[in-house]
Length: 493
Image 1: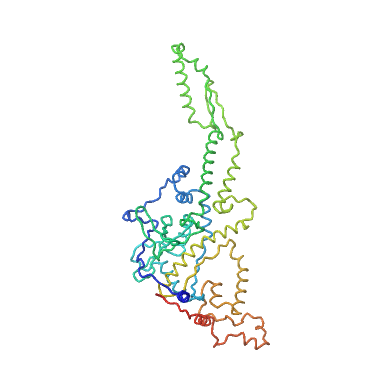
Image 2: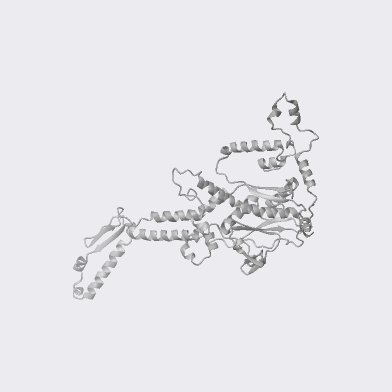
């Protein structure tokens, strides 16, 4: 009997009675201790910083944030991932039995419009809140931290006001019970308990042995700084041996000929006189470039060191190539993205395909986050349906090359629709990412795509494959199947 009680609870929803109104978590730019002050603008001389010295003092999360902005390789990889993964977001609502719930889809559409565009224009300035902008921020946070988190901001009537993006680098986790993690947000001395139903978290390839996520670019830190060290050393070598330099030889015998008589018999005065003359000559030649003409007396001999025919003495290319390969591997990117593609290389290769698949997986944590968030928002309205959020796959081919594949897909789906294997809503959703319009006929299971129906002489076949007025449509058949399964009805508490 205990087993029957467990099965009887399946499908029941227990909604919170004390959800936080107005939100609790702090946004990445909000500081409650300085809320009356302007947000500090980023420094404009950060490009002059010594990245090598920061490696020994900064944490890895802070280093990744810096490299994403100032390192060319990391910045190129981030830009490529953000561009390739920037595909439209799709969503579908289903009943507990798996049928498409068009009413729930309409509710979700209204919620997304509500949080995307302002409705109260008396509130003052409203930043861009569209779904595309929100997803761009989520993707950037995912690449920087390895995870994304958000909080639903509700009003007094449990209506969805906003979705607040939370920096996962400010989260701390507790496991007071075995297998149950609870998050806390810490910003300076403030601590906010986020063990609330309106907080959602999703990670990308997180280590299961730790609740803390890391950026997928974390392994590039050592190779980037090793490359910086070698490049700095190369600059120093080039300054010493690579550029032309002037070698000035002062003839001491000529200088001493002009030595005053009172100094000739005193060695100390003689040395002081020579040093003063050398200092004067050095000051005269210090402002002259090595490629400029020089006019001098016979007391000075001038020649050029490190002529263009000279060499540095070390071939740095193999070392740089090794570091470039390590950077590419650590960034999970391809040579073409980092500007190292060779001429004649086919970029639409297995390498590019893997990179496209990795960019597609960037959207999976976002889809999981939106699915849980929108499902909770939908169930606050009393619905027992759930929401599936997904993104279009990144595609490097132009649309005209994809057209034959789309035609083949449509032909296959039309055959399944004709045979009744899928419903009308499922067909329209897979083809057009929307439910069936009310003006479209119900064709599921009618056999309209049967080649025999085109035979004018076979009247019986044509009659069989023609939809009848009293024939139930696909939605009615789905509702019938749903009612047959409703022995264990869903209830909302």
